[in-house]
Length: 332
Ligand code: 13P
Ligand code: SF4
Image 1: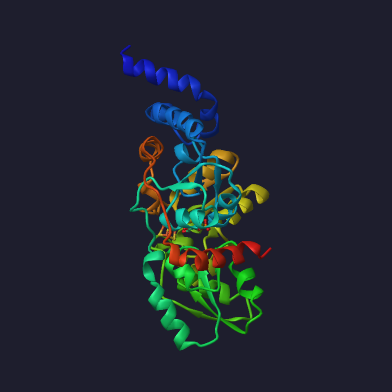
Image 2: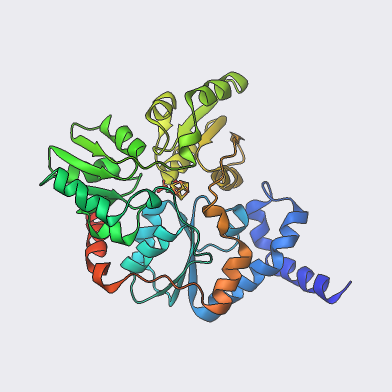
């Protein structure tokens, strides 16, 4: 056995307990290819006093192998605010790292790939928000966290898919501007008396699901329960059995324990939830988020080795952007 293989054998031995969590979704041969990076990341985290926040769309070797905190955008924002670490590595997309930095300005926040963006965040600029305010004077602006800090800074309050209805209603206004996800806005409008003025942004992953897909899943998999993210088009969310944030979908599976389920969302989530719920059969249509998939064990390791890439927020917008996120966190 060569030196490299000896190293991998040693890494595999040290991380053996972790494999128990993922053995139903990662074959042993594949796990062996991850072992050295996982082992190195676990040691680097200790050396740097670092934590890794991983979104539910991260691949299982990241999500179950190296993450300290896992969750939807809301959970990651709440946990970032509380984190007592010198370094926070965001295994997710850029807006999540910016939100972590806003809520925890004294920690160094790293993103392993600066190109990990989001089609929703790219759909709107701060100038667009100012123009919306001019067009609808006095109407409060609720901004989805899937936006840049510049856009948050122009907003009254943020929301996530997990709290959007509550946030919209917390303002006590007859109408609100809700940016930038048109489908999330339409899905919330169905559930509230508040009039919602939407923007035209879409998630490039969730906009692909159709009602015909749901009909096919039901036909091919009798009894299947369909859970949809509210970034899906309204007719898709309506045709599903339940619509909620990624964490709410996981909660639904864990409490209701369906025999068969299909999650209309990014495909790594099914792997992550399946690993923890072996009694449920997951039908897995694969819609990848190319931005989430930019994060890998290799670039997380590189981020911790080199302390790159640091995410900062320009000083002139920090306070206003932070206030919009903190107002959201304060709504219970
Ligand atoms: P959640 O807040 O539901 O995790 O959604 C984030 C996201 O990017 C969905 O596409
Ligand atoms: Fe953005 Fe959609 Fe990817 Fe989520 S899944 S990060 S909303 S592009």
